Length: 375
Image (cartoon, rainbow, N blue to C red; front, top):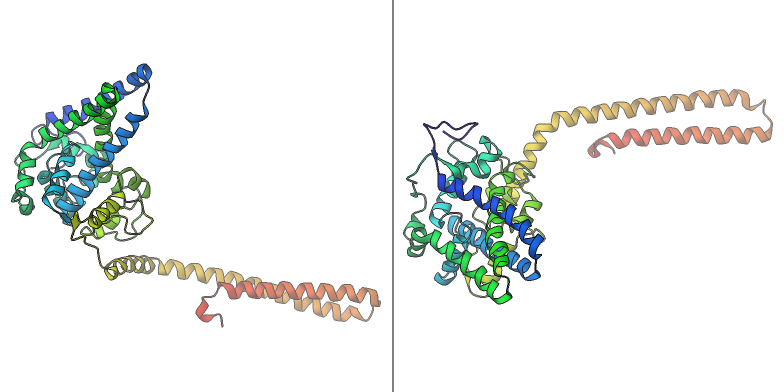
């Protein structure tokens, strides 16, 4: 079963190490961060290190784990793959084999009971509870034979926690020795960066299936959200990704914020990446047209009724204006002979005004008609 409300102790396996890690690290970050700022301030180098390592480690997940290893949307030589595996381990999001196996299952069974982090089970399940409460200790990685047969991925799978810890201690410590702010670097470039990157990644499983638009497909709950893309190095264009998972881009338009796409493209220009895959434009357009057509068909009856009511209302206004104009013309013709010349001009202007209003009413009625029948 999936988590729904309070878990049953007899049918779930609580991963206490994950519980401890994902509970203690945020508490430490929330406690030590303000304490350190209050006593030592914050140095510009700590800010630069935080964002720099956030970007690098984030690329390990977005460009490495996700777009290269999980979807084979691009590929690289062994040195580049090794760097991506080390950076991915530095996020403490499990090994590439385990991460990609879960992710492939998510795409295959999105929003069903077989989806490991289905949003149908609620925000918190999709966000992180699925990591804490596991139904299967002996995970089946049979959907990732390409990775289980890869010596580099095997090495990272066996040692990923040690690799991540070595990176998260050695790199911030080295930066601290260079800047003279060892504790600040360990805090900002290490602990806080890990916690922030955790929950930004988790947002793709939770918020990106709840908040945003569905311009490409509504067969699943995935959504495009530019704000989430800004926080997650481009991963927020999740509706496009679920429609075209084999594309190395999530934000396929040039102006969409997707630094992962730009990083992969830059690596390709340097000869460090190859086989960059793009979804064919006709597939993208066909998918979008299918969605627009479906929306049109579903609302056609409503639109027809709305247009009919607007045309009938405009027609009533036109009839009223024409009747008023005919009535006034008759009255003015009867009285015209009794009026002096100076009054006749006033009558003429009034008649012109009535005719103008009638023309406007006609134009209003005509404007409500579909273009094909306006003539």
